[in-house]
Length: 288
Image (cartoon, rainbow, N blue to C red; front, side, top):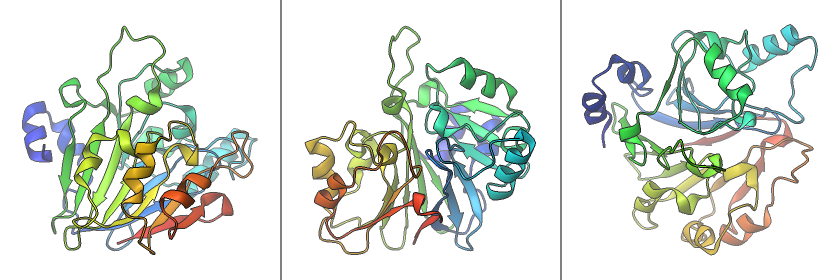
């Protein structure tokens, strides 16, 4: 489904306000910032400017002050600036994906948030309630890949992976959240941004096949955890195993109590890839 057809289905100006590629000449790639254990990914235009933030988290080993809170928030705002109307799309409601959006943060006061419907914690619900502008992906667009187009035809795909069921007990929000991908129109190269969901469980990723699409890079799902890794995960990534220039970014704290990342799976599936941790202290860039 294209952004334009989705807009008609919603019949709301909210969708227009959330379109991150409106007026953008082309997509330049992604930047994965170091926020400790958690995700903060920026989609960049061809001039390197941030046009969309995906997640706004960071927990263990985050590089920001612990106290006082005002200093910590000022440091977050300086390193992850959000201007009025900037878009922030959330993969899922685990705290390490949103917790830098504090009560007085630029992200909460100025950002326009698109989030999934999920069972979550009281802290997450309180944070959402304090956000000045937040919307959920509509129910009729859950499990429906949505495509946004830049002026040159570059694509951003957004997909809520499962329908929300209020009667569900024990929802694994890693598997029911939102996954993203970027496609460069001129070359067919792809960047995968699966959040915490394994790549083989993202339905729209099935359209990316070696020979028609080259994998330029990905942000490893769930910070490089081995959780939910399966033979299908290996098989999907290994179709690009012969490529030398694939970049795999791992967004994890150094140290962290989860022992992330587990690099062995990626060494096996993508033996020639560059495996880079944000825990090395600098952002990781994957550029078209």
